[in-house]
Image 1 (cartoon, rainbow, N blue to C red):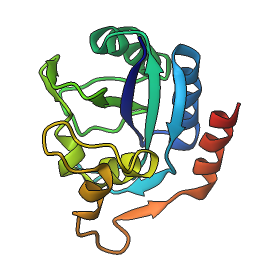
Image 2: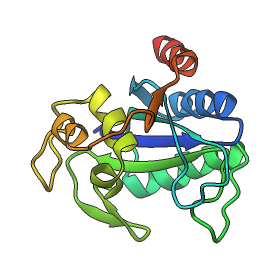
Image 3: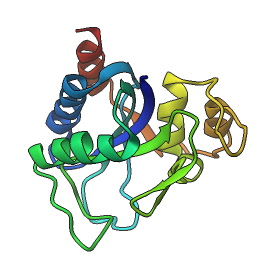
Length: 174
């Protein structure tokens, strides 16, 4: 049985290269269902670093969430030079987080799924709402579109990056 996984991808070290590379690798290890447009956002927690490029991705896999995280996400992050430090807000080549896994509710490596970032961070909610607006959050019952619309965004909080969005869309078409 195929599992539907909704992911948030972010990069602020060579993001124009690393975000498309991560999507290409995801397509090699799973079935790529949808890719959102790319959004540029200011870094959280540690402002003295480059802005992030973020995108939402939906894939299907026969792997469990734990297997997908270990065998796919960790391998992609490692292949793209991700260095983990004590500072969770440090710059990174790529960060891939499981936000939703089917309609399941569980803990994975100390993180709650559905990932709380979905209701806390606009770039996560907006990106996923663009690819699955009617999907209902398994705990709140809200659609992703309703969650995305609940944020009060100031002008410039999220800037579209059409050039990178076009690259990701081309990968999806392959």
